[in-house]
Image (cartoon, rainbow, N blue to C red):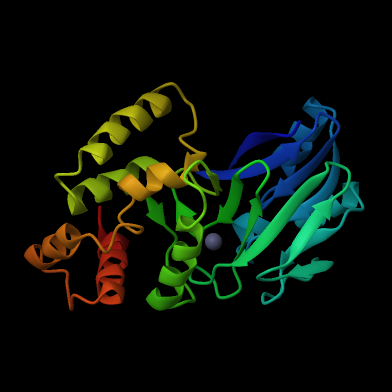
Length: 257
Ligand SMILES: [Zn+2]
């Protein structure tokens, strides 16, 4: 039986630790210190490191972890991360024997050009780094709106029950924007209350699910006619093509406070 531990790091990052009570795999260890502390607290031995993309808040702890554990490092084939021992890309499947964990890999460029996501089909878990967030999506630092749309479509095609382990606690800010974009969407209003209650108790709002995102996340809902109308009314739209709507949404979110 596998479980996932949430390790908060920095201001608003989550590092994920998949474990079976004995062995563990860490996803995107931006900082080694809280990972080492969690491993010690739960008496877990690190068996592997999984990376989604090259940003320092996702890979910064790798050298320190490798000083404590001689383990394989899986990561994106198309990004220059020197510690990667097992480069991965779309269609690859890996098995981590210590945990009997099977993962498949998707290319999800947009936030960065080589960004990958990991799917544990048996557990219905998705580890998607900074691609899809609860209520939002990653900024387009390297890729185009077209690439991000294609990447998010792959994730949206996963079963509704799939749990989304994204890398940041941005949910309430994302949903405030979602509600600006779709003021009539009651699912967003209900979700804000629900997520606010979790934050008030100091709990994470993630993991989310694909089903919940499809009903509340504007970056999966950009084809809804109401969204294009709203962008037009607020002076944010340059065209009604779906990609133009998505690009205008992302642009508006970049400056939304
Ligand atoms: Zn990033």
